Length: 335
Image 1: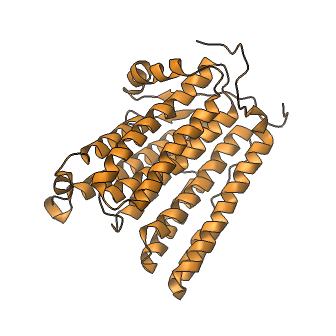
Image 2: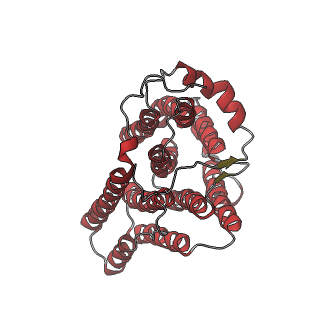
Image 3: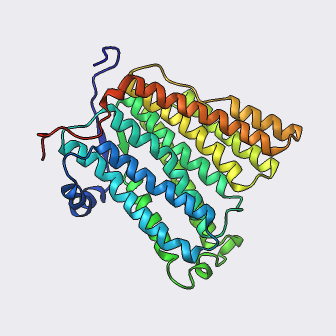
C-alpha cells in the first residue's frame, strides 16, 4: 500500500428521514440478491450507465410521451443502485477510497444529466433556465465535497440527494400520463409555468445546500467562490453567444466534474486544496466578446476539459488503482 496517503476512514452524517427506510425496505433486497463475488465498483459503474443511457435516449428522442417511461425505469434503477454500491461494499468488507471517488465523482455528472433530461422531457431544452439550474446543481455538488475535505465528514441535510432523486423519479412518472404537458406548462402568477417554477425551486434548493455547507465550514473557501464565478462565466458566455442547450451544458458539466473530482481526490490523498480551472471560462468569455464562431471554440473547450478530467482520473488510479477488482475474493465478510 502507498505510504504517502492518509489511512482511509469514511465518515458520513445523513439527516434525511427517508434514507434509513429506503435502504432497509428497498435497497436491502437488491443487495441481498447480489452475489458477494460482484465488486461494489461495478455496481457504481452500472448505476452510472443508467444515467448515460438516459441522456443518450433523451438527446435522440422526438417526444416526451415515448421517452418518459424509459427515463422512469432508468432513474429508478439508478436511485436503487446508487445506494446499493455502498451497502454492498460494507457487506463484503471492500470499502475503499477508490470506491468513494468513483461514487462521488460520477455523481458530478449525474446531477447535470438529470437536469438536462428533465428539460428535454418537457420539451424545454431551449429554456433560459437550463443554464442557471445546471450551475446551481453543480455548485451544490462541489460545495458538499469541499465541506467533506474541510471537515473530514460528508454531510447530507434533511432534504438531501435521495429526496432529489425520488422527486425526479416522480417527475418522470408524471409524464407517463396523458395530459402531463398541459399541466406542466400551465401558466402561474408572473407568467412562469409550473415546470419553470419547479425548476427555479430546484435551483434555489441547490443554492441553499451550498450555503449550508459554507455555514458549517465557518467561512467561504476561496476555491469554491472561484468555482462559482467561473462556472457562472461559462453559462453567461453561452447565453451571450446564443448557444444551443448542449453547447452550454457540456462545458458546464465538464468544468464542474473536473473541480469536484479534484476536491474529492485531494481529500482522499491528503493533498492541498485544488483550484478550479480558469482557462475555460476566460476563453469562452473572450470568444463571446470577440464574436468568435461558437462551433470550434466550444469544441476546443470541451476537449480541453475532457483532457483535464481524464488526467484527474488517471492520476487517482495511479495512487489507488490497486483497490480495483473485477471479482471479490471468496470468504468476504457478509453482514
